[in-house]
Image (cartoon, rainbow, N blue to C red; front, side):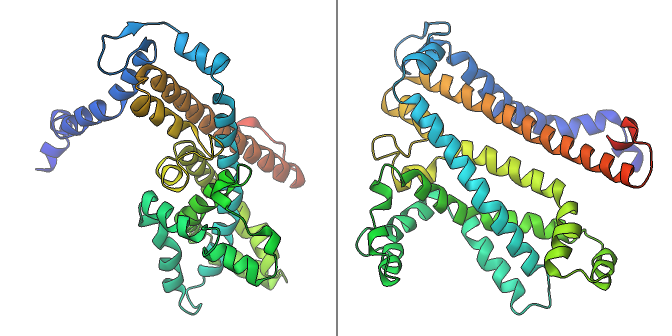
Amino acid sequence: MQKLLQNKWTIAFFVLPALVVYVFVVPLPVFESIYDSFFNWDLISPMKFVALKNYIELFVSDPFFYLILKNTVIFTIVCIVLQLPLAMLLAYWLQDRKLFASKFFRNVFFLPTVLSGTAIGILWQFLYQPQIGLINVVIRMLGFTNFSKAWLADPTFAIYAVAFCVSWQFFGYHMVIYLAGMSTVPHEVIESARMDGANGWNTFRFVTFPMMRPFVQISVVLITTSSLKVFDNVLALTGGGPGNDSSVLSLYMYKNAFLYSRYGYASAIATLLLILNVLLTLSISYAFREREVRRRRKVMVSNGAEPHLSSIV
């Protein structure tokens, strides 16, 4: 049996069905979408080849594109700024299994992650309600009556309100990633730092956090790519309104495809999203790699060693 399982043809026989399904589910739709972006098509009439016309219209004459692109960038940055520090601090707090109800709080913080974006959006619609919503009620109770407002109807704050809702839903997911990362930090290193007089903050800053960089990189990539693709929360909360002030690229793609019957134009937006995802993922990986190389070179120089590229890459 062992000899049979080591045979290459046997391995190929078991892998082939999953590979065929993967090809039909992932690469083929991507190439199909890129192909469709060069056509003018309403899903009913014959497809009309228009070359780069959809892309030219998107970048040159679309009156909403740059506003929606700006919203997508703001949404991504706010999600990173809110989720990363909160998830990291909670993970550092909850890593201590002796802490009272540690497992309970881990489950509570992770719970919103398993709920659908639509359900979360409907819930936060009630929380943001101008008159009886919990957020505005608390603001008025604290005496900041002037700050009470219709958050989802305000053109300035709508995109931030949506980003806050999504960050609330997913910070628990990244907390679990950091908990897994912190479990790999040797306990002896933490104890040595404390014996040398480091307090909790210094232990976290100089010992735990530097060892968490690979997990931070994973977290940043996941938040960035998921923020670029966010759809259900935005649709449930604001539908992209008021106007297009909280709309993002994925919602704009959906509206063009299924509300305006412009499938080719929507495919061009989908292709742009794909390119943005690939470029940002590569840029984040490169930035973290360069930072790690500089850190290792600095450590080697401080230890009196001659830094060689092969030893630090």
